[in-house]
Image (cartoon, rainbow over all chains, first blue to last red; front, side, top):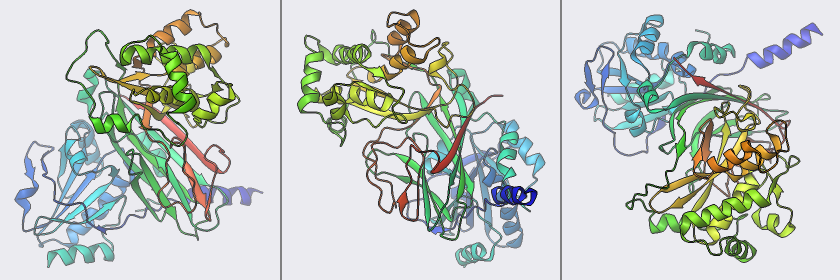
Length: 164
Length: 359
């Protein structure tokens, strides 16, 4: 009986493997993105032309966002020396909250602030994490809504393709 | 990193103490979070689920912040109905998944709304297209025949849209009743309701009646479907969520459009809820709590409630053989091509929890 109960518990626990995938972008022109990092330094997507950029909208209350961030860091490390950048835009949370998060999960890329949520709305980032892969031409090529393993071979192949 | 465990959602709740858009708090905005957990029981074949999301359109009384999901779905994405802008999370599981489960977290802000009828703004009007859209019939809300005749009788002698709307509101409060035996929030079959002569039901019936009567005489009106997420701050036990578990707290309201005032909040169904359910129950219509609610619910809403959408005749995207639903306020799911009864919690097991995010 105990074994049966344990099995039931395990069925309830051993689930939840988010399954977002990179899909070709069909949403039109790249919206503007001009935000600041935690120290107030401005970051404008237009200044990254010529590089492949991962624009990732996230929030500390979004568990899948937090879960995928280390894999973004792994991808970034794997592409060291390549023209690849990550812009991780927090959706409208207080600075203190983001700083606290940053202290608990140190990451190699800058965390940026969409103070009032207007940038996220312009990008139609309704389902978090919302990630957009921008090509060297400045256009959005791929999008993923939901958690993704950014260090997987499949994702890395997409990024490498854009780096060509 | 082992993130594939169910504990992560509870961890998320513990960690997430943020107050998004905290600058808005000074303007009366409150931030809430709902977590909807859906399990499709006894699933054979491909399973699908449709979870209503907070209204996407920003209003002066509600703003969407964002949504996220976790679970064992093969895929999940935001879908729309294409007509009313209904926003829903559509999830799909492979036929090998015997225990489909998904958790959807939504954050949004609300603040109380009220119309000051003494201060019209002549610049506020509705476009001809919107006026036509919000006076059109739906499958369950006809605007001709018996509905129109009843509306004309009720509004006889009333002048202007506000006066006519108030006449309809008062008539519904005086002539309908909340029927506790109605399944869920009711269906909103206005013609059947009138023809039966039995004007009992719940919010989806009584407020749909309000919308139908209004539309039939050319006043733009719409149902707004949602769920209560917090207790009432006005002392009404019956008009708030008593616990964080709001799985059965679905509630729909109504609006009409008045030139010079914009969309005006009304909720005659909630007046009848106060009559029936406010302790000690079965209050007389002249009870001071009923009188106060009746006065307040023409022109204002307490926003301890989340609005999902304003849609009718909803066809669920990717559904195998789903009929049109009168509205989307509940969680829907199908397994092996069969739509589970949205008002039957045993076939689609779900819980919705709500909490306010404070500093």
